[in-house]
Length: 319
Ligand code: DON
Image (cartoon, rainbow, N blue to C red; front, side, top):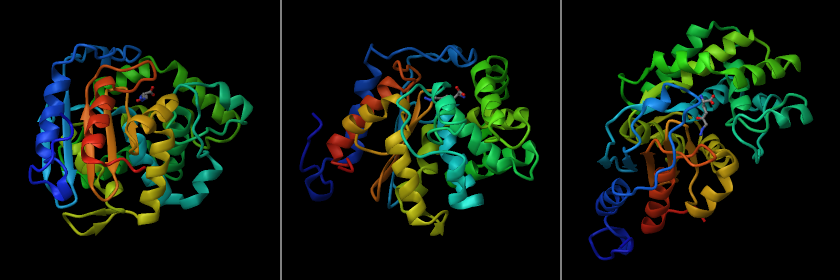
């Protein structure tokens, strides 16, 4: 079913639109979907039976399927955007604050921080993302930094309606005991340099940005297309930086499920506990999938499966 040939696609590949439509139909009828995140009470309210998918190709073709226009909480996917901004701000000096190795531990684990003197393993685990947010705060007020992050999301998605869900942000703050512990721990080692509540406030809010699959697939284009937005001919970051961020997505983007995601899908991808995944097929397409049911690592069950089918059918694996 995933290897339809001769339907007019390039080099004998199946037609992308057909593949995406078939995947969405398959996913929508699947019963096994994992569980929605409950540790953020607001996310526990999201109905599990949803699935959306959006693919944007290099020539600007946009293919949508299922609930591709339904906004959802992007959660940890926002860490890709804050990493991009922090690298833009301080360049390679960022790596003094945060490492570049997979953690092999859950996204909210504190255990490695003690061994490694408060320096988080990578920018995508919670500790690493809080440290990245702290770098963005240097010399700025939380409100300014949040504005900068939101403006970046709107710019790369070419959509001014991207917004923060204040209910989710409040819900995160009220139950964010582990993140508060991580932040205080890093503050004790001077990895965080700004007030802990500033770093946490911005972090909780950027995790609470809502986007649709369409917006997210648009937003990932700068990573898929060597740092550029093909539609506008604008360079967002250098191609080298796009390659490096993509490498981190591949090795760390799914936490202790990153190896399995690379094995099955073979694309750089970043997940969030809202059930979204932003993935890139370098030079080919930017992809967003969303289904709120998660596996035990906090990654979308149907999202991963849909990407596995898509990469296989289109021969998009980077390997
Ligand atoms: O801090 C948290 O736990 C959430 N705001 C983000 C975690 C997350 O999305 C992990 N991703 N799969």
